[in-house]
Amino acid sequence: MYILGIESSCDETAAAIVKDGRTLVSNVISTSVKEQALYGGVVPEIASRRHCEFISATVAQALADANMQIDDVDAVAVTFAPGLIGAVLVGVNFAKALAYSAGKPLVPVHHLRGHIAALYLTHPELKPPFLCLVASGGHSHIVQVKDYTHYAILGRTVDDAAGEAFDKVARTLGLSYPGGPSVANAAKTGNAKAYRLPVPHVEGKYNVSFSGLKTAVLNEVNKAQQKGTEVNVPDLAASFQERIAGILAEKLLSAAADTGAAQVCLAGGVAANGRLRQLVNDGAQRLGAKVYLPELKFCGDNGAMIAAQGYYQYVAGHTAGLDLNGLPTLPIDYE
Image (cartoon, rainbow, N blue to C red; front, side, top):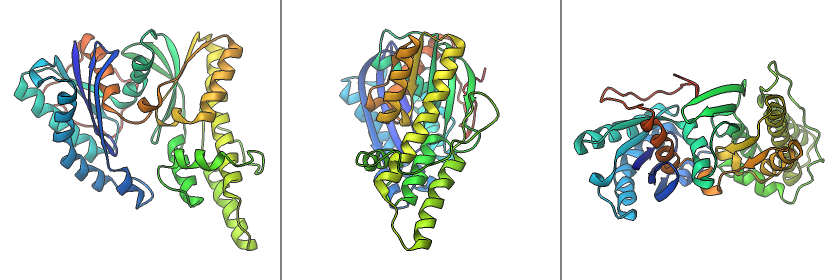
C-alpha cells in the first residue's frame, strides 16, 4: 500500500511516498529556513506564504521521484495538527482537494505521531510497545507508544519546548537559526563544565521545564556585559547543551526504569543532537533496554513520517471527509 504524505506544520513544505508504513519510496522537502533565519525564528505569515508557493511543486516532485501518478497512490495523508495554524491549513486544504479530485481516501495525521513513525523508516523491525521522547521546536513529551495509534503521555514540558530553548539560547549567544545545530556546533570546542546552570525542578516526576534554563543563559550574557567582558560562547553553548540533554535523558531513562520499558526511542528535531543521543544510548544500555534512534534526515519535519503514520491510521480506519479542519493544538493521545 502506497501512502502520499504531506507536511506543512511549520517552515518545511514536504511530501513523500511510503510503502506499507516502512519503506521510503520518495521524500521531498522545500524549506523557507534561510528566509526565517533573517528574523531569528519562524515568522508564521512568511511560512504560510511559502507553503502556498511550494506545495504543488513539492507534491509533484515526490510523485515524479517515485515514478508514480496520483492514481497509483492508495491514500493521501496530511498533518492536520498541531502546528502554526496558517501553515497547517495550507497542507490540509491542498490534501483535501487532491484526495477529492483523485478519488482517494484522506487520512489525518497528528504531527507528533508522525515524528514517532519516522522510527519505523529507520528501524523496520521496531514494533510497539515502546517508550519515546519526542522533542522538537514546539514539543517535549515522554510518550508510551502502546500500539500504532494509541499513546499515553507520561511527562511533558510545563513551559518551553527543548527546541524552542535551543533557538532562543542561540539567538542570545549570537548564533544562527535554527538553534539546535548552531548550539551543538559551537559546543564542540567548549567546556561543558565552565558555567554552572540550574536544574529546574517541576511537579510531575517525568515533566521538564526549560524557561529558567533559558533565562540563566541570558543572565550570564547580561552579567558579562555589565562587567564589560565577553562570554565564552563555546563554553556557554556546551554548558547549556549538557544541561538540557542531561535533563531530557534523565527523565526518559527514569520513566524507562519505572515502566520496565524494553525499547527506548528518540524522535523529533532535537533527537538529532549528538549529546542527547549519546546519553540516552549509554543510559538505556545500562538498563538493558534496546535503543532506537531515527536517521538524522528523519529527525526534522518531513513528509515521509506523515506517510508512514498515515499508513497505520488508514489501516485502523481513521479517515476524514472534506470537513477536515486544521488545529493549532491537539494532544498526541487524542481519541
